[in-house]
Image (cartoon, rainbow, N blue to C red; front, side, top):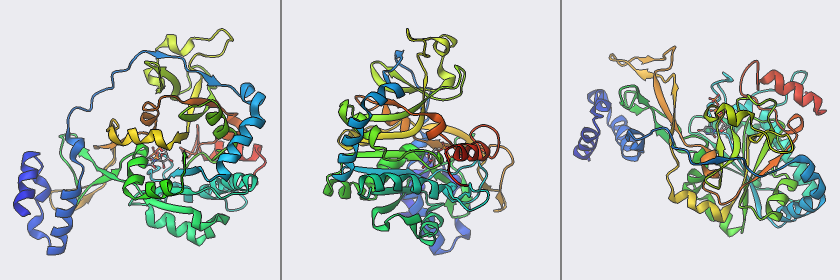
Length: 404
Ligand code: UTP
């Protein structure tokens, strides 16, 4: 085993990971060796290049006025799907929330002012409204990371699951990927530990699969999963109208979108890429794309994604066969110095790698861009202050009559 590990690391030019091995106890050695055996080394492939984009065109989107015309039909179809147990919800809560600068899981953040109102609580309250409307529980799968799993579970238990039926909640932990320094070297975060970070919000599907959750979905004949971010405190989860619209229009997936506030808003928008659903980031758009308008006057690339997607399970299996592209982000990553001391850098020093849910949209045959009113459904808490912050989310909660 020892020889195999040395050989593996030599081939990858990563033997520095063993530099404290003589100081380790047998237990620590086993821990390090186990981590090396289990680690996904794909991040070391140097072929993470900028994606080559296909032909980008405006998408078809269902506008709010279009939705209104068929609201009742969509609602009934959605409610039926929920009552028949075909719909589950997946809360993506494995992120690090570094922009918010809150050490605990983001969902534990208190967005209340005169009373306590946690982000997790807002989401559960929103989901409970649908449960009451449909008179049926919606299974909720919560993705955590190894770093925040214990805190998250304890918090939910302490708060009695905010009134949700705990038998309908299942936590699973997302996979990790190693971090890499600017010289292409993996990083030691301790003498017997290699630095890793959650593998991005696109990791939910493979992590859920690994955790054995798909067996449960299959046994229960579930068909749809509504995947959503932890930080939009106003979002409607398992929204029957959204689910019904995707089913009635025979799409294999759906994405809740909001109209851009102005052509230059920094948001990824829905598009078609080589005729398939896709998302184009604001920095990938040309000036012409940004200002282009449709005959009715709306921007051609008008619909920003809100990280609230509906996926049809049977179409998702393809996602397991395909390796989602890795995106890298330059971050401040603690490491162990020459003398064994832990160093927390003040500036970004290394890369973390992520897969993204939006790359799963590209694997779908069709995706309904479903417009929602941003003042009623979009209040992301990304930053402490300024745009998409605690302050803006509080304002929006108040406007929507939610007591904070
Ligand atoms: P963000 O892209 O905002 O990332 O996540 P983040 O890690 O929460 O925050 P920053 O960028 O460090 O400030 C969007 C959603 O994806 C989830 C987050 O929890 C959030 O719901 N996510 C992100 C995961 O579940 N896992 C990840 O590895 C990354």
